Each structure stands twice: as structure tokens, then as C-alpha cells.
Amino acid sequence: MNRLKIAFFATIVAAAANAQKIGVVDTNYILARMPQYKEAEARLNSQVKQWEEEVQRLQTEYETKRNTFENEKILLVGDQLKQREQEIKDLDAKLKNTVSQRFGTDGEMNRSRSALVKPFQDQIWNAIKTMSEKNNLGIVLDKSNNISVIFLDKKYDYTDKVLDLLLQKNNAAGAEPKKTGNNKRN
Image 1 (cartoon, one colour):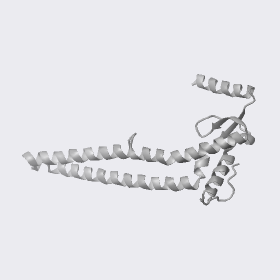
Image 2 (tube, rainbow, N blue to C red):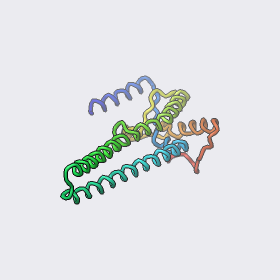
Image 3 (cartoon, rainbow, N blue to C red):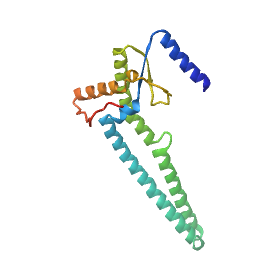
Image 4 (cartoon, rainbow, N blue to C red):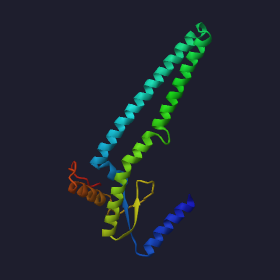
């Protein structure tokens, strides 16, 4: 970790020595103010809620069948016992499979979230690139990615410029910007 910090500061010092300008943006702030992203995120959250309800229904069904089986187990014999045990095992497997498919590492939720964010990240990256070229920036840091910025003079924070550029592009493409008040951060 210390080597990473040393390398980071060495990069900044080297950039300063070469008279490179450094800018900082906050991509989380930008995403939170993009109306299209908010709408897409709301749709995804609605889908996730449906998946959670599906899993909850399966969980309730599994617990009910398992409890009923435990209470009636003594009365069941032979094939009836095996059949009910198999039903419970199958339902348990279905529950685990559904949870994995929906919420696992490679589950639908993660794939959907990645698909949701990618186009907006690309737009932000292109806006950052345009803004950095206009302002002759050699380095642009994203302070939302756990970069410790101890002090930042406002003139080096380009977040609002990137956001304005994105909103202008979206407005030109026919999207109504949904600005509420002043976007400028304090």
C-alpha cells in the first residue's frame, strides 16, 4: 500500500515537473445528477425488488414444506417419505439456484448493473476527455474512486464542467435536462 502511495505521489511530482495540469472530477456526483441514469437505476431497482420478492416466496414455500414434512414425517412410510424428502431437496436446490442466478457474482443483478452503468461511464469518460483537452490537463483524477484528496482548490475541480458538458450534449440530443436549481457544488 505504501508503494502505491509513493508511486502515486511520484507521478504527481513528475507531472508537476513537466508542467502538467491536474484536474479532479467526482463521477459519482455526476452520475447522481444525470436524469437518464436515475431513471435507468430506478428501473433496475424495481427489477431487483421483483427478484427479491421471488426469492422470498420460494424461501417461504421451502420453509412451509420443510416444517410440514418434519411434523408429518413420522406418519409417512416408504415411497411417500422418499417423495416428500425429494420435493424438499428439489425446492431447496431451486431456491439456491435462483439466488445464485439473480444475485450471485455472475448473476443477473450484477450483469444488469454493469450494462446500466457502462453507457453512462462512456459518456462521462468522453466528456472528461473533451474537458481535459480544452483545459490542457495532463492528469484527471476521480475522487469518487477512493483517492484521498486532502486539499483541492476549486479551480482544479472540473466536476461541474464535465456535468454541464454532459447535460448540454443530452439536451442537444433531445433530452430535457432536469436541473433543479443550481448544479454548482459548494
